[in-house]
Length: 250
Image (cartoon, rainbow, N blue to C red; front, side, top):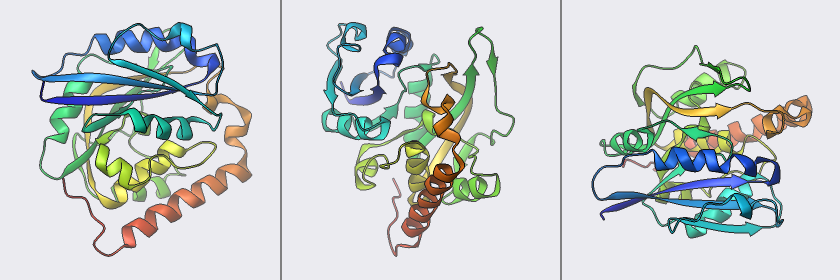
């Protein structure tokens, strides 16, 4: 085997029931010869609610930790990630066939340090809805995502739940931001500030919509907290972009 891609999943009790669907989507992946995936699952908390849903597979690493929300759980999971590349997969989402292979192909391109792809919202009735502002397939130059995000009420043209990135760059940026939400957006903006990315127009993720997900809670749209989150995400990205010589070129 020549390479491993580490898939990191943060999970809490209510979302654990969807882990078998996420696992099936991993089993459906066909990677290039010599590659395999590692699934690093980290429970945000220390309960008995998650472990029963963790599949029995030698490629899976499961652990628990103190409650700190998704960003903390994902960053803790990095301690067990062995791959050169790290892929995000939320516990309630599913990869589409071919996603990991397309991510790997993008990351082999000169100067590309992270990759994203098209997303379809998966609604409770099984139907899907796409996003009408996807960029064209191809490279994303440094600063493009931040510019779009600030011009469109803090909505990026690419989805952080689809990120696949170099592990060394992820570690250099400190993992996910220590925020109660938008921690993945914070990471996306940091990646964009210091390196070039790639967007794949083929759908790479089914993003499940359900009442128990964090983004559907009232606290997520509290204007005071949202403004604070967006302010610190933007300030961090601009500070990184301004650092002399702080660039990753693949």
